[in-house]
Image 1 (tube, rainbow, N blue to C red):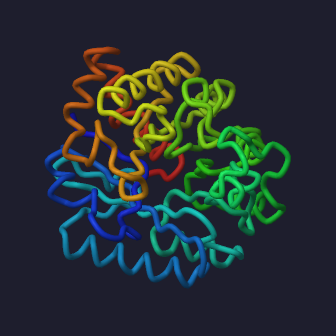
Image 2: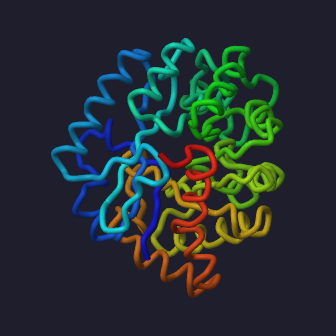
Image 3: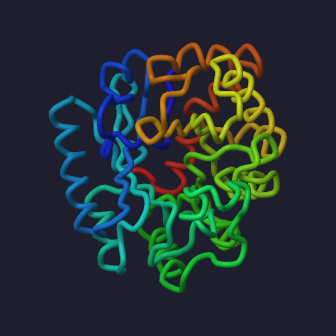
Length: 305
């Protein structure tokens, strides 16, 4: 079953890579989104990662996607996205679009010019002083973040709220346009601030967007075994379907940004994953989660050439 993956960090991976062209082909990947993750360095750092993406497309034989109509059935398609502080001015946001970005996250785990992240105290979380369930509820988009969201709608860039605070999420949802949480799970199953509440999942669905399942073990379950992760992923799928319906589910693996998952270590395992989804929830829901739901968002926001 061909699938779209809304998020990987292959452009900044170090050491053993989870995402390779060979593994994507083995997994029957239709479209892989490659995130330019910018923690520091702003647009200059983004530009170097965009160069790396273009080299990857050329040297590895990916088919680049700039518009929905670019997606080819007989290729591994590649779409450039960004995450973190990739832009700090409207001119730089236009520059992202010119370099091919078609999906953009406003933040990572620390504040940016555009907004605030899930965790109110990321350093405290890393040091064990705060719980991963504590959510940032008050600080959301900055005025510049609101301005950016409006330009994204004009240009055709999909807004991505993964890593965004609750306030940021609701400010994007209130705009009543399709958006995504490219790599987030269900907080009702695993209570991390990185996961979405049932109300948030419903809001994504109401706006015509999607939620991409994240394969990070900690975001799925406290049980990191292969059996525990399999059970947890199915529980997250069920929770997302119950909260938002069958048109909201997608996949955003976070490969190369997470430790190896014992159940789904790399893209070559995706066929068995979608077979399991089809067995548990039906073929049509599996097909929608695999590709149809995200391709709909791509058409609705980015459009055809």
